[in-house]
Figure 1 (cartoon, rainbow, N blue to C red):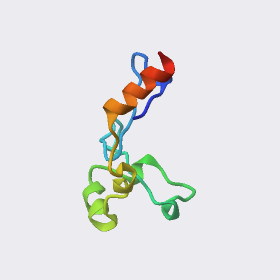
Figure 2 (figure 1 turned 90 degrees about the vertical axis):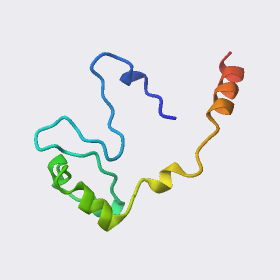
Figure 3 (figure 1 turned 90 degrees about the horizontal axis):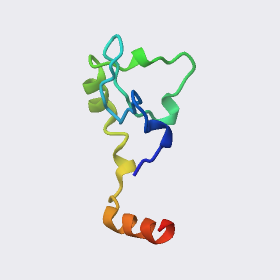
Amino acid sequence: MYLDFLQNRPGATIACPYSLRPKPGATVSMPLAWEEVRAGMTMGDFTIFNAVDRVKETGDLFKGALGKGIDLTAAINKAKKVFG
């Protein structure tokens, strides 16, 4: 679960992995391995035109973040107990 009070306002956006961004060049929000991060990178390095080939080459780099998932009902119930 992602909570960010600054995103709860008109016009706020948040990008999830592999989402197409409303930017010139049709950029895509793309997860990276630390080894790929380098000076001079730009959003334009990852676009709708190269995203599919990149995922075919690197695999789903976000897959490990998903894990087995969570029991959202249990999390909400625990939050209710803690925060009333």
